[in-house]
Length: 280
Image (tube, rainbow, N blue to C red; front, side):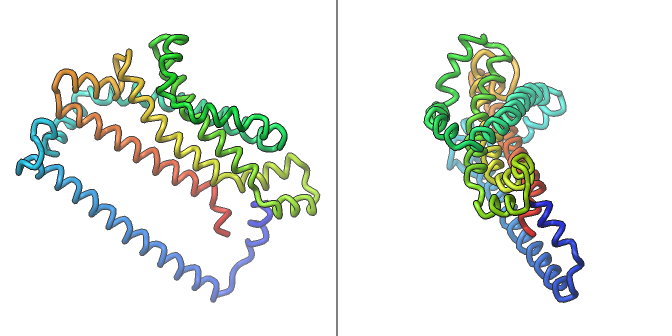
């Protein structure tokens, strides 16, 4: 349906429409610039609080070192290659588990949602698993799969799977019935209807689950790496804390935050790319 809509709107707009589109684009860019500036100001304010609060004695400088001390340690670990060794270990586990969750949850969720009796049969079971915290069953994964890489990838897969699955089910099941009626009027086959109407309409909802899972892939793995790991950001945070290497601990935490922010913005950009037709 999105392709059909796009084809009908490819005619060249009149000058008044072009001017309105340009004005709208300029207004949108201005709004984004203002929002970005305010966001940057907020980050600068946070950095200043972190830097000066320990210096003036508002917090214990040993427990929370000034920001420049943490950044110096971060740079030292970066130049020595120590930080990259742990980051690459965590990213490899997260990416594999996250990719497996997407590859399995979206097709399965679409299949379940497409048939209402099947959806109603599986929904209570899926809700039960979704509300079972991944870290609560981490001991089960370690008992079955050991404490190596397999259990860590499996726990990421579990944490990411159900948000994507349930978002896919919700997105496919709540497609506007008017779109489905229009597809039937146009004589589209069930496969074509799903490919050109249902799935594009469900993309925003599916990406909600993907974004939730993107954050979970990092957070759950960090906790899992604190048990039985020899590399990874979770291991580094735990190791630094036990050995009272406080600046190193905060440098690892800061790195985790930056990775999470980068993943979130990357997924948002990807969602916009796949949802461009909705702005038509």
